[in-house]
Length: 149
Image 1 (cartoon, helix red, strand yellow):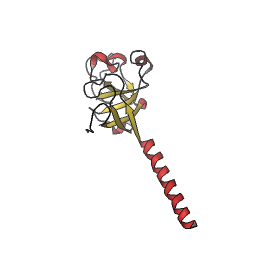
Image 2 (cartoon, helix red, strand yellow):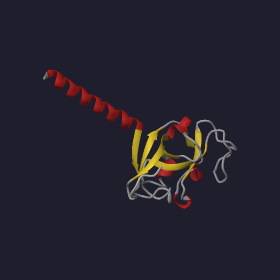
Image 3 (cartoon, one colour):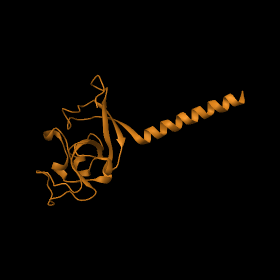
Image 4 (cartoon, one colour):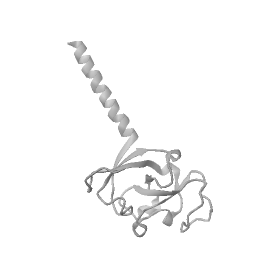
C-alpha cells in the first residue's frame, strides 16, 4: 500500500513539474485590438513559444513587450503581437523613423499588419531584442473555429 501511495505521489509530482515546465516554455495570448488584422482578430487566442532573438526569422509574428511610447497609442496590453520585418544587420525598411541605415545589434523592426491601427516601429523605431517574449506558433480556437499554423 505504501508503495502505491509513493507511486501516486511521484506521478502527481511529475505531472506538476511538467505543467510548470510547459508554462515556462509556452504562453497562450488573447489577441486584443486589430493591429494584426486580418491575420489575427480581436478575441483570437495564440500559442507562443518563449524565445530569444536568435530563434526569430523575418516574417515571424512575435509577442513583444510594448515600449512606453506605444502604450499611450495602444493601451490595451503590455504585450503586442507584431510581425518581424527586419533583424540585426538588415537594411532599415522605408518609413521607420530612425537615422540608421542598418538595424543595430540587439534590435529589430516589427510592424502590425493593419498599418492604420498599429503602434509599431513606424511610430517608435527599433524595438529592443530584450523586449521579445516569444514567437507565435499557432492560432487557436477563439473567435475562429479551428487551429491553423
